[in-house]
Image (cartoon, rainbow, N blue to C red; front, side, top):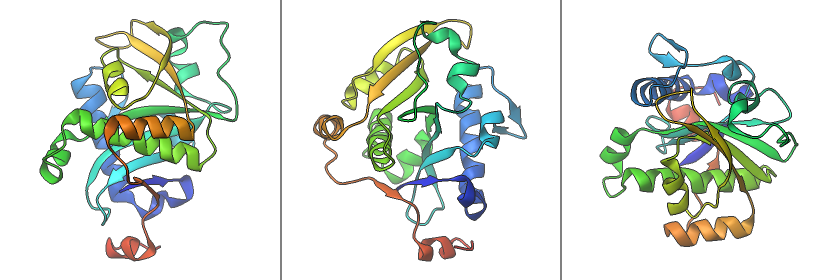
Length: 219
């Protein structure tokens, strides 16, 4: 299932959040070689202290994490403006209530292969992107922004996402980092469903009260 955790819910799911930060270290530090802050085997930065919304892909009991993404409104501090400002032209204004930033998107390919052997890594990313679109629609978001390495364009295309690449820059990791913008709408979601073959809703918003109690946490 795909759920979101807001700041007031963090304390309910410490295990999921801890695994998310460890997964981010494995992906962005170990695999991609990005210059990120790693402490005690976890990747966290100052934006995680600002109460972002986390989109998490986990099992129905909240025990295993398959993927995650951090969501933040562009009306506040963002990684895009503070760190990756060089990836889009200076005359473009990307600050608006309906525009949100999606960062640190990652998938635990080992966990996915164990529980979903029929899914390829590209399939897994496609599911995360479809859930992101559903989540954004639910919360009234009109546009999503993201920084990504060039090879991710084929992942977006495979998921039916038409990304408008605004620019790219070197100096952040082994490969250039791009800045892309994509529309969120029912039409876009329909196109994504057609491209991926995913017809059933993925986004569940949150674990149920019974599920929360099942993992030994107060609901």
